[in-house]
Image (tube, rainbow, N blue to C red; front, side, top):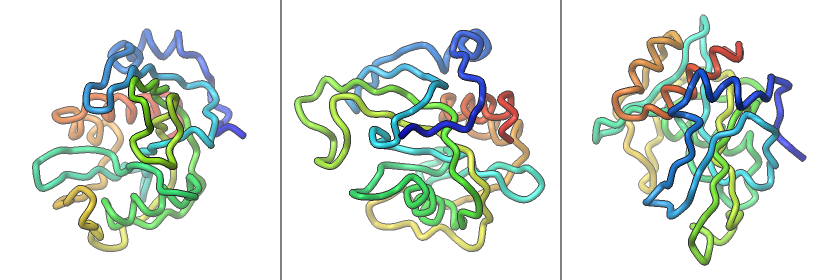
Length: 187
């Protein structure tokens, strides 16, 4: 099974529009090489998911941590978790939001690890996908901020262009992911 929303999978086109997003790179903290794709993603190989959560009149939910980092809500998959469960948990923990719609993967980093073992035993290895999805959500309260996660101190809902600009300062990848979703007409 693959996650696929039926959007155009034209990595050449998108790489011209978003060269920084589609340029392969080495991620030191994860000891892996990543490259972006808009092609089909094998659901069972998704290790991480970040959500372009759309709320209200086409606004995007963004978060800021106590350290000042700005990002899209998301994180690492837990054992046995479906994508919808992963998205719902991360939205609740990091944004105080409730998932209200389908989780539709539209892009992913293909992550090829150089490590001998996976980051966590249940995660796919040596190839995993760090996926990006769109989903509808509503902010219903403060983030739950579990002890093992980011401590989020601010949650905003912004128009897509403003959300991308807000995130850009600390996470240009997530900023371009929002822009890509907008250009794919998913927002």
